[in-house]
Length: 146
Image (tube, rainbow, N blue to C red; front, side):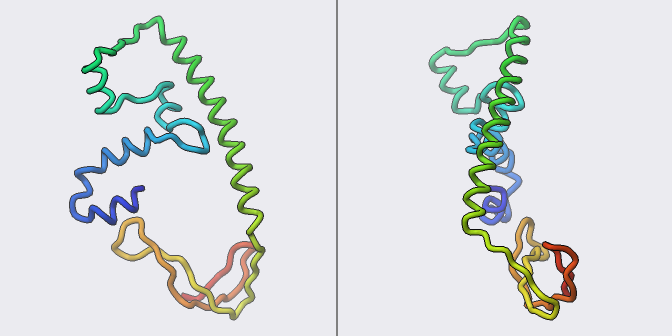
């Protein structure tokens, strides 16, 4: 979301960045089953549109101190549910990834493309190269000559 926003709003990105962060924090995550804000606060955040609707419908409710234990209990419950949803989602994603994943190995001397950041562009990267592999550092890491 941030990268797309920065690409589209090159000059005036500061103007809408807080709205972008609000949207990201209140959007429901498929892997968690709730929004990051609800995990943090124990309830869904009231955005500008919800506040206008409440004002119009006169639905505003102000919590008192007697609700603090209830909020704590709700937070604990939401965290447990989110943890379970995240674990299940991770298992599903791993299963889907493993179906098409192929082990790859490169030998020294072979030429490869490398995904590197673009200088001067925030959060942007592209494939560059080809570069030559000098040695295999581990099962997944290689030392290349740039």
